[in-house]
Image 1 (cartoon, rainbow, N blue to C red):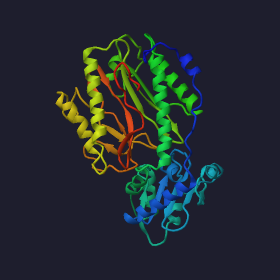
Image 2: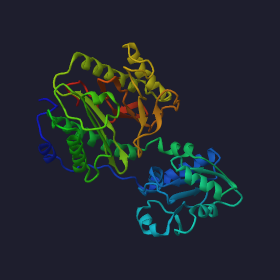
Image 3: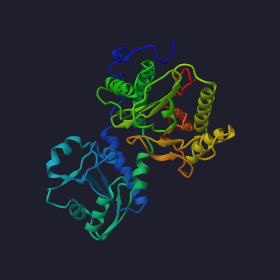
Image 4: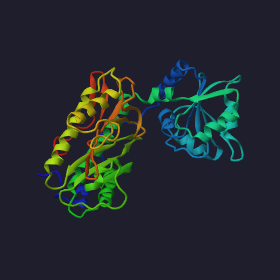
Amino acid sequence: MSQIGGSTAAAELGQLKLWPDRAAPISREERTGRIARARALMAEHGLDALLIGAGHSLRYFAGPAWGASERLVAMLLTQDGEPTFVAPVFERGSLEAELAVPGGLALWEEDESPHQLVSRLLPGGGGVLGLDPAMAFQQAERLRAAAPAWTVVDAAPVVDGCRMYKSPAEIALMQQAKSITLEVQRRAARILHPGVTASEVRRFIDEAHRALTGGTGSTFCIVQFGRSTAFPHGLPGENVLAEGDMVLIDTGTSVEGYNSDITRSYVFGQATDEQRSIWSLEREAQAAAFDAARLGEPCEAADTAARRVLIAAGLGPDYRLPGLPHRTGHGIGLSIHEPAYLVRGDVTPLAEGMCFSNEPMIVVPDRFGVRLEDHFHMTASGPRWFTEPSPAIDRPFA
């Protein structure tokens, strides 16, 4: 039975039920351990205090799944005592409902300066304050002005030094998210037919994600047909599927905030010899990147291995087209894209717990592109796939 076409959106959605054997959320004990790890890294990098703003890192350490805004919401961590959570007074109830670790509250009214409040909370005498690398420039500048005795620096070595290495609980949540998205991809391929629009497919993918997760839809969704696949993130306007089109679908969801991001490329109808050749080369490059991901090797080694395959076939070199126009992969976790990166120049040693996409896309300019994206995590014995790569252009699912 063909994996592409032959069904309908209604039929596929009618078969979906809530995903069984759901992974456990992150425990309070694990978050407490993260804070202890952050303190150890603070000492290693000479930080006297750490300020984590609303966003993925606040969720990582403390639980609240809040996005950043112009109002400062943050966790202040020093080397002693519980963390302190800074927030507007009117957000107190909402914040307390989501906090997953113990800590004090430091609340500010709308006519007060939260930056001055942070300054008063810092230990006397000055020191080095590490700021969440995702914090807005405006917030950083206001903190510098409010605490002139403090040297404000980028806390990326602390934040990335924690978040880059995933625990078994995090990997289990990511495995569930990726398994869900792969199943959605499988079903999306079945609903294709001549004349279907990209927006119809995106709507199906969102509904399918919601059915399997119990409410969380697609965190993003790219659906491209034909010429549009030659542009890594597509073209504006509606795509309509025709016989012989390359199909590229890149989508993901999240489970407890942990992300999936999986791409499948295949042809609707009969593939040409050129499409088959480029697809097979993409699959070979993806396999080469995986094989090069060895403990202790720099992240860039995977990118080098993928490009070596393409260069041997006469593509590239570097970022030239036809060839690979972007990095081979990115870290993933609470953020869809996060350090470290499988790209030339990133010499971060590959280590147990690191998680990556593997997507060395090949673009044939203005004609078509092929991107196969699966993810792997580093174990004590080397890389391990979260999802099985595509076996063939006309059999995109193992």
